[in-house]
Image 1 (tube, rainbow, N blue to C red):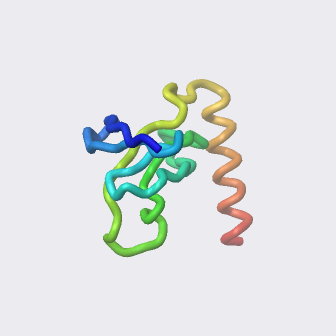
Image 2 (spheres, rainbow, N blue to C red):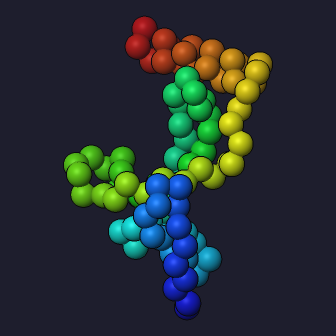
Length: 90
């Protein structure tokens, strides 16, 4: 299979292998979901080692969906996130 280089939004070189995005570690990029107030429910590509703990991962980051959520959908996602957190902690 062919390895092609590309770039991410953090200017780190990535590539593609078999149609899958690769992070700077040359691992298949994983899709995560952001739950911050600014980007609730927004999907992004990142190094698959990021959530495993430790510092043994690259800082590859690229939005999966290119547009931010605005208005009432954003407010609804934040409220749903907060309700879920409250139920987990309560």
